[in-house]
Length: 428
Image 1 (tube, one colour):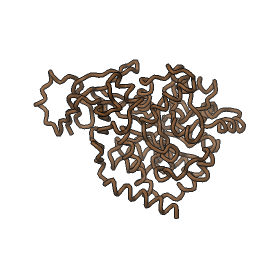
Image 2 (image 1 turned 180 degrees about the vertical axis):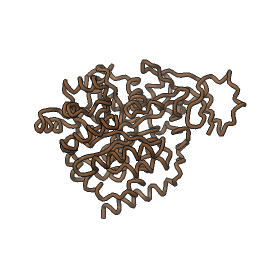
Image 3 (image 1 turned 90 degrees about the vertical axis):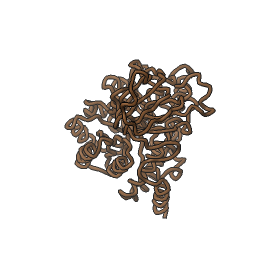
Image 4 (image 1 turned 135 degrees about the horizontal axis):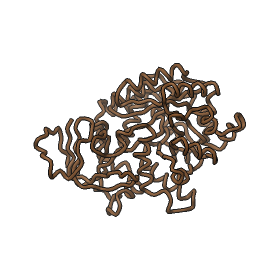
């Protein structure tokens, strides 16, 4: 489709990770951004527009990238709560996930995708033990997802992971796959060694839950005499990059490895608060030049898939942790939630708004009390913004959400019915 946005405030990203506003027009042709400018020198009549959208002075910006989540866990929202991580995993998550069918996962992922769209999220980085139905849901909804394997001692095998790598990457231009495993504490050394070899074979980055709790790091050091970061580095996992989710309890050598290997730390503040895991050293990452991305984690540990809440927490918690109100600025956080996440996921074609980039974008409604006055747009988005300000979400040139209505090829009531039916069966 050819879509013309006009009368817009367009949020652009510079090379030094700073944002600026340009008033004017943005044109989408097919799945790419064809033009950004004031539109005065362009002959708009020469193009047959499918839609011309008056942005009414609202902000047009790159969509958020949810850099760590487990989408299908929507079925455990407000069901598996108020437990520390290991109890939560072993008493609630793993036993109930074992009851899911492939079809269950498909419908539960659709519910998650709908929630992403309401939060202005245009792509997610999903780890799950059965990614194929999630990939099918993304393709059917028109949503962009990069998957990573949840390999561990209880599910998947190296052969399955290799098969998934090719199958999901070839499924659609909306689906990608990077190598990964659940965590050091759920995965044998033999499996980790095998994954390192597989990543080397296909030249893929590697991802894992890393240093989420103090006990995780202490137990790993008891087993191997190394932190999870040191262990995975020594196994040769990071020859093509990658990173870790959470990354709260990193030690000095871990920071060196992240910096030298160009790894990304994905922070998940709401989940880490709810599970009482801790606060990630985001300010230290920034000072070391380590890329940081933002994720919601899954809807069983958060419980909502809301990038606005995460952004506020990233900055607020960093200030408390460092006892420095000046650290981790709104611009830093907005970069993490957009381009930082895109870098982590290998989505360089949709990391910002620019001509030739993929049209993954959102419209932020400024005509609401929490966005006024317009002293600073970036600070308004990070510090006072909310889902209610997302007016439109476009992925790959297609509008999937607009004015609280979904355009994903599925009736929303049917998605809700399926989700409640699934959890009802599991409870019984």
